[in-house]
Image (cartoon, rainbow, N blue to C red):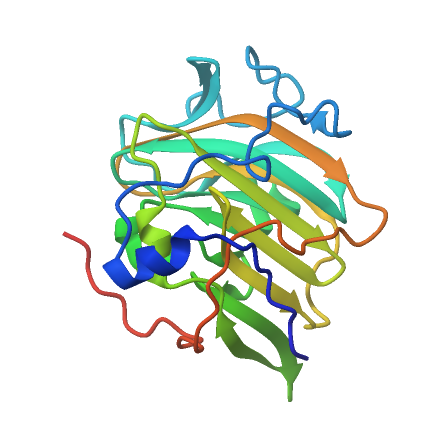
Length: 277
């Protein structure tokens, strides 16, 4: 299968690439703004004041500065999640996030509760980490399952052959150095659009496509809950706001919605991890 690459014309991109990695995030566009979600038929999942409708460890999750805040001033011994228990299959999800310092988080979708007492969740995840974590930034991950599925910049097809997962990178959606550069530094907010329809998943940050994956693996989940992750490890804090979702009853039109600069495939697997300082 050859994926149709998403392309949004922009006169600035060629110049940026010729000049090297850009140093400023692009101006916010209608594709990434969530201010008009109510008019567009989106359901708001967070009221900006409370965790009504969500459940998680109150020692980890709270509302601060009008945003869902996850993390701890002490190390966490296990991954824990703030769960939104409603089930979704095909959808477009909007949210904003920011992360102070280092950390590891993510937005679960098409997931299941694995351990209610521990607020443990298994399923697909759009990863949220600082760009310094390289390939982990912006990747498609399956918590409690197939692990890394699509890395940053991958236009990926996933299949199962002889009971093994086969990952085929058909192209890159954008150069990785460019994608690292579009992240807005704390305390600014980053705008995310996550679209899942059928077996295709598209993850865009500040208007740029991070991954575009088609999952043909028969073991993949096609519906499930949403959740926010606070990862085990050193103290960290992450915040989310303007979380809104629109169920989809037909394939969305993605042409010209997001910025892509297609290039040759990058490796399907990240190789050995380089320890972070």
